[in-house]
Image 1 (cartoon, rainbow, N blue to C red):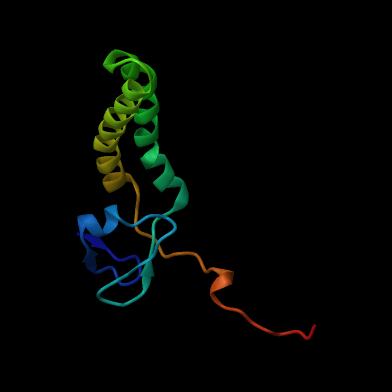
Image 2 (image 1 turned 90 degrees about the vertical axis):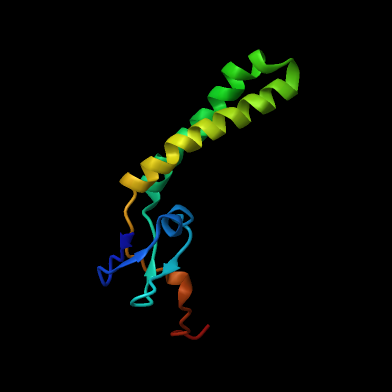
Length: 113
């Protein structure tokens, strides 16, 4: 379980955090406030997935078959291997944070045009 950055209660499960990305917000079940993850750390934690897919296409692709089919399967195998590294890194390295205030959430009509 992960603690909410607002109320410090452990209200987020492992899978709640795994599905939470920097562009998404989740509500705390204890205090009903929005929680997110930081952009930089989330992208850094996801890099093994991307690098694994590229490595798979370049290195394993030609070994698995000729042409596009080998590259496709190599990319899939590389992405699966990268995901095996991404999940624990995301679990240990990416914290839950209070999301930044988004100016697009509130529209004010203060001036006359």
